[in-house]
Amino acid sequence: MTPKDVTVVGAGLAGAMLCGFLGRRGHRVTAFESRPDLRTTDIDAGRSINLALAARGIAALDDLGLMGDVEPLLTPMRGRLIHDRDGSETLQPYGSRPDEVIYSVSRSDLNAVLLNAAGASGDVTIRFEQRCTGGDLGSLRFRDYRSETEYDHHPGTVFGADGANSRIRDLVLAASGGTVTIDPLDHGYKELTLPAAPDGRPLLDPNALHIWPRGGFMLIALANLDCSFTCTLFIATQGPDASLEALDSPEQVETFFGHHFPDFATLMPDLAAEYLGKPDGALATVRCTGWSAGDRAVILGDAAHAIVPFHGQGMNAAFESCTVLMDAMDRHPEDWGTAFAEFEAVRKADVDAIADMALENYIEMRDSVRDERYVLKRRLALELERRWPDRFVPRYSLVMFRTIPYAEAQRRAQRQAAVLDRLTAGVDRVEDIDFDLAARLVADLHPEEVAR
Ligand code: FAD
Image (tube, rainbow, N blue to C red):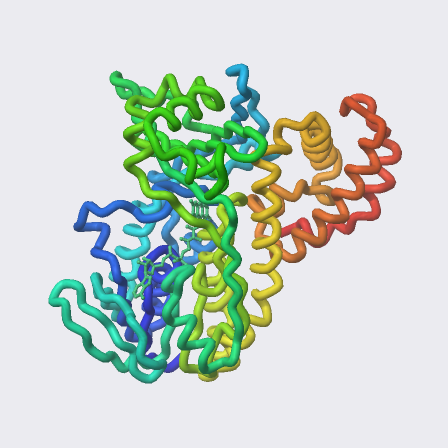
C-alpha cells in the first residue's frame, strides 16, 4: 500500500484506534481532537466514566496487539445483579460458561492506551484542543483553542471519527448525497459516583453489573478500579414525576431515591448535592447513509452509527467498524473509494441491527428482568445452550461474546425467540419443559452461524 497523507478528526475511542491502524500501515497521520490531551490534563472523561467492553471490542484491541496493556484496566462482570425494591438481590449470569463475562473499563484509561499506541505506531501526530469548525473536504477549517485562532488544513484523505454530532458527517453527506436521521430518545441519564467505603473497600460487588429496574426507569452501577462505582440513572427527560426535569431540588432527589432506591440512597453520601451537581445526559440513535465521498473521506464510529447504550455496544461496534474498514482498505490498497463503499455495504445492516437491539434492551433492563416469564425464558435459553452449544446461543451471548455479524445475530435471535415461546407456553418451570420437543426444534437451527 502506498503511504498516504491522512487526517483523522476526533481522537476519542474510534479515532485513536484508527490512528494506530493507519500508522501501522505506514500512512502519515495527523489527528485533530477538540478536547485537551486526557493523558496530561485532568479533564472529565465526557460521557460515561466507564464502559462495558465485550468480545467485539476485545477482538479489535487484539488486532492492534493492545490487550496486554488493557487487561490490567479491566474488572470482569459475570452477570446482572438485580436489586429489588425490598432490598433482595438476584444474580442473573450473562453466559453459561465461566469465561462469558464482560468487563468494566475506564473510558479515559482505555483512550490513553489507544493514544499511546497511536503515537508509537509510526508517523502519527495528534493535535489536541483543535476543533474542526467546517470548510470542505479539500480544506478543513479548525479552531485552535490554545491561541484562539482559526486556520485551514489540507487534509489528504479524511477519516471522520468525531462522534454523534460529527462535523465531518455534514461535509461527507454534502458530497455523497447521503442522509442522516438523529432519533433522540425521550429518556436521558444522570451519572453519579459512589465512592469506596472509608476503609477503601467497594460498597457493592465489583464483579457484577448492578441494576435497580423500576419499570419506567432504572439505575445501574459499574465498578471502577479504585473501588468506586459509576452509577447511572436512566429516566424520562420530561414529565411531572419521574423525570430529569422533575428532579430539580434536594428534596425531590432525596424523596425520589429514598422511595425507589432506598438501599442505594443509604450507601451514597451527599446524594442530592452529587445528583444536582452533575449534568443531564442526552441519548440518540444516529442512522446514516452515504458514509464516504469517493476516496476523499469516510466516517465511522458514533459519527456514522451512534446507538443508545443499553446493550453496552456503541464502543464495541465502533472498534469493530475500525477493523471492518481496515479489512476493506487492505483488500483495495490502491482504491480507497471502492474500499470505503465496500465498508458501508458490509457494515450498514449490522449497525442498523445493533441499533434496534440496543433500543429493545432498554425495556429488558429496566422492566423485563423482573418478569417471571422473562426469567424462565432466560434460564431455558442457557439450558438449551448447555445441551446444544453448537445450535442454540442466547441473543445476549451472540452480541456480547461472539463476533458473528450483528444482523445475523438478530435474525438468529428471532428464530430462537420463537423456540423459547413455543417451549414455555403453559409452563412455569424449566424442569417441566418438554426437552424431546426442544431437541426437535433446536435441530432446525443451523449451527454454522454461531460458530464465530
Ligand atoms: P466519541 O467517543 O464521541 O469520540 C469523538 C471524539 O471526537 C471526542 O473525543 C470529541 O472530543 C472529538 N470531536 C468531536 N467533534 C470534534 C470536532 N469538530 N473537531 C475535533 N474533534 C472533535 N459503549 C460500549 O461499547 N459499552 C458501554 O458500556 C457504553 N456505555 C455508554 C454509556 C453512556 C451513558 C453513553 C452515552 C455511551 C455509552 N457507550 C458504550 C457508547 C460509547 O460511548 C460510544 O459508542 C463511543 O464513545 C463511540 O466512540 P467514537 O470515537 O465514535 O465517538
